[in-house]
Length: 570
Image 1 (cartoon, one colour):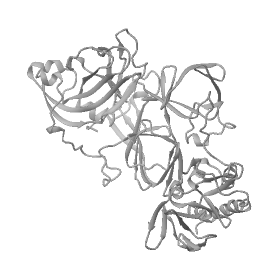
Image 2: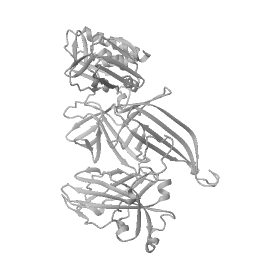
Image 3: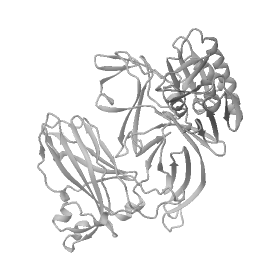
Image 4: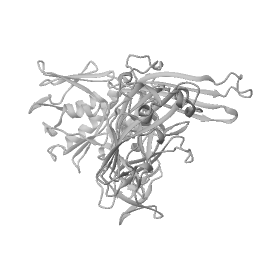
């Protein structure tokens, strides 16, 4: 048995001894928590001959163990990384990593569900188990969660013995949980170099945190970290008795003044599947900039590959280069792999060389399209082939857009250009603010063969291939006010800046959208293929904003609606 399991066994035995000493005063635990999350059981924990029995599958799965059942032999097997166990119903012995262990009580089947001694779960997973008699709860910290918290197993034992759960019950004038507001820094004046993120975490009835630690909320300790006092009264949030915000709590978030913060629930043992990219560029003096790229490949089996490089880019001037143009030099390169674990708001990366890293983790869009890992924004790579080599970028993007009829913008209907569609997606993404729902129905990328009569109109865009990006979206006005569609601003944002749409190329629609009506719009963006290849991100951001009511009020409450789109040229 390896050292982790042996250490876990010693602490688990101590915990179980405490349970046994109290077995005469309790019939069973009322709740079981792993890493602060309550485990739902079909069969509640029970005590048999002084030993606590728990339903096997939900508990071991909450600890990241994959479990299988062999009905013919009545044997259950589990696997977690390089560790494994096997237990046969009715037998007093089981195996952990190939070695036999004694069971105080054999496993049994109750109403079709397998129950096993809690002590065995501790041995099989290296977890720390504690019993809190006052609340009749069993608390368990997995080995991964102990690593995330950065504490010893002895300290973990003290905490679970004290009964550890998420404090999720708020009083009438307080909140609980993690809320996020994001906005694109289109002009760069905010200094965010892309997306601006505002966080707020309500810890209890009177404390909150505004600055997320690099390794997530799980490690926040108000005796060491900067926690702010707050109160809520008459629709106002008052922080530190000197900052006051209007607050309106919604089902999936809240308004602070006019900014909407989405609520994010903890993600326990979530599995990812895909390739994600994050890149950045910081300009320096004399035309020199520092560029970095991080590619993470996550697999559903809990493994990952991390490919990271940094480099220096120069303008090729006489001062900073050799005069030959842009140059790129890799300064450092490493590629490594390991196992990942997502618990609550944190991701633990355990590399094969023994290195362990802990980062804050959440999904900004509450789906798998974008991940926030530490301070970096990772976007999914839809062109990823699981069989490709991790360091090899995709050579091309396959799609069937060439055979798809182009959207009927004025490029088509006025015969300004012939479109050769090269990429199309139909995301059906929807964002809604203040009764205004906008759905991105689809978008097309097309290379243009411009009519001779209109060539002069495209001068200055570039000498090579010119590309049209046409986005089709539906505006559904369920508010109580009429809105003026001509005021809706659409831009595509990238690290290098932003590109405005060309209203003269969009079909004309009735500018007034009455309450209860909907309208379909096309936004057309013109850009050179050279810029798409060299300066645009893989996933630029389509941003819609500034929609006004016919009375001149802001129909979107100052909020920008953002949709990630795919750049097939990267």
